[in-house]
Length: 211
Ligand SMILES: [Zn+2]
Image (cartoon, rainbow, N blue to C red; front, top):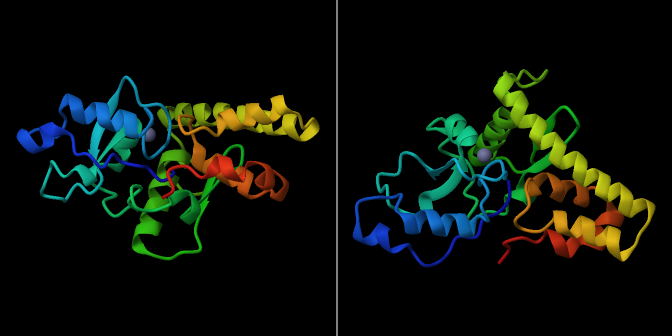
């Protein structure tokens, strides 16, 4: 999960209709979020949901409360996680350490707040399944995590190729995986951040959406 930059222009239909899911809203969210779910950072199309960050917000058309999520995250977040960090105002990739350890994802933070704790709980739920440790995923959750593994193992292979042979090409291959439209940047951020040599080379490629 990383910071999301939302367009400052409020889609017209939110001001002129009673709908929160007009075509212009969908289009703007897809553009702002680079076709990715704001929680798991995987591609949302074709089954995206327009989600209310805080489901208790009585203004259903509050632009600041609308985000795009995939069906998997939408179902699991629902109204059970209404206090997560707001990705439009917080550098989530810096606040929450997101580490990939092969069969498990680990989340932690040195900042203590209800919002941080709840965000971590949600991420645990999405990536590790129902029980904390040992992991317990149902088949659908296992399938989801298999896709996560595939993407991150591919990224690690490109890192490995770069470390074995630092060339323009191997560097470019890593940089491409760090571009804003790519999946799972929160995990990739920590893979780079945890390694001083990689951080020195790629630090400018992991500054997405900062102001
Ligand atoms: Zn998702």
